[in-house]
Amino acid sequence: MKKLGVVLQYELMTYLKNKSYVISTVIIALIAVIIMFVPRFIDISAITGITNSTEQNSDSDKDNSDGKSNSDKDNKADNNKDVILIYDESGVFEDVELIQAAFDDMKIEKESSESALKDRVSKEEVKAGFVVHSLTDYEYIVYNKSMTDSIDIQFNQVLIALNQMVYCSTHNLDYEEIITAFNPQINNETVVLGKDMGNNYFYCYILIIVIFMIIIFYGVMVATSVTQEKSNRTIEVLVTSADTKTLFFGKVLAGTIAALCQAGILMLAVVGAYKFNQSAWGGMLDMLLDIPANVLVTYALFGLGGVLFYTFIYGAFGALVSKTEDINKSVGSIQLVIMIVYFITLFMLMDIDGIAMKVLSYLPFSSYSAMFARVAMGNVAVWEVVVSFIILVASIIGVGMIGSSIYRMGTLRYGNPIKITTAIKSLRKQKNK
Image 1 (tube, rainbow, N blue to C red):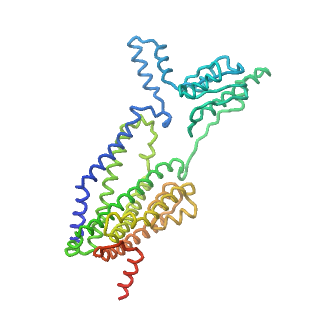
Image 2 (image 1 turned 30 degrees about the horizontal axis):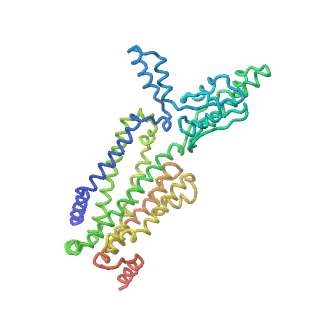
Image 3 (image 1 turned 180 degrees about the horizontal axis):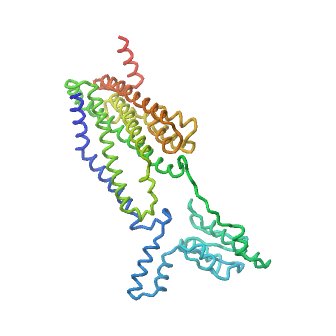
């Protein structure tokens, strides 16, 4: 146990003193902090749904105190808005007030001809344009239509409302009364007695990605560390001073702790920066701060278990090769398994209580993400979580013991990469002797 502590301390300090580790931690944390400050300098209201009306109002008060006119400020605000052109071929719109009311975040202008409208759109001088043939017929002109473009849908609603007004006027009907009758105000309140899958999906998705990236990144790092010791013959000195199991477990545990340290620093940076800029984000990421305690505990336990499980496997695979350039070929199969589990889990979030997700939550290869997802979004009994965790812990111990045996066998064997099937056959032969 004492030797394990010495090996663990040495390996951990090797990570913490590594310049690439320190620099990457600082850079990633800095990038995360900068992203959290983006709303303070760039308008992301299209994403957050939060406008800068408060800031504009405060600027307005300041401008008034300086003696500037409201009309000047309105013109300045209009100049900053995207422009939508209208070519009213049939004279449906006497003015553009009705359209402007529907597009309050854009500026509506009339155009004299269809060709002039298309020319300005093609030159990207304006956001888009509409050629209105009649109350029930129009063309939407846009240069590049984005996946989130809903301008034509809004305009369609304007024409529907205008058609209703014309019909009511023609038949001497009260438009306001009819609209009120057909669109009564309904008061409703949603009371969730179990889990709110819609709200929990976002943070569940993010946390699964985080643990996936930790496993991939640090798994390869541990495998590389093992291979480098073989390539420079350091392992020959190490195995004479400590048991191979001690070396293997110390190396894997050190890699896991280093991963948790880096992930912890990154999360603290993100949360701290977000808390500082919470109002600028409009509370968009508040669900990350309101994750239930039982979900966080499950994520911590199963996430740690998943990292240990796969890091032991990566360490064993690293011992099968003698050159660092052969690592990717060696760990390719396990990375394929991780990728498959990752995509299946994310896909099955839509059917969190389905039989496939339940099976995945018990398998050690996938329980680190599947069981966490079930606790966060689905219905799962405490005994299911306990059984799944026991299976995961037992699998970690089993993989650790097998991995240390492969490590012992592979570290002093040089030359061509050893296949995992060959390594397992060799272990069986040694056991049968």
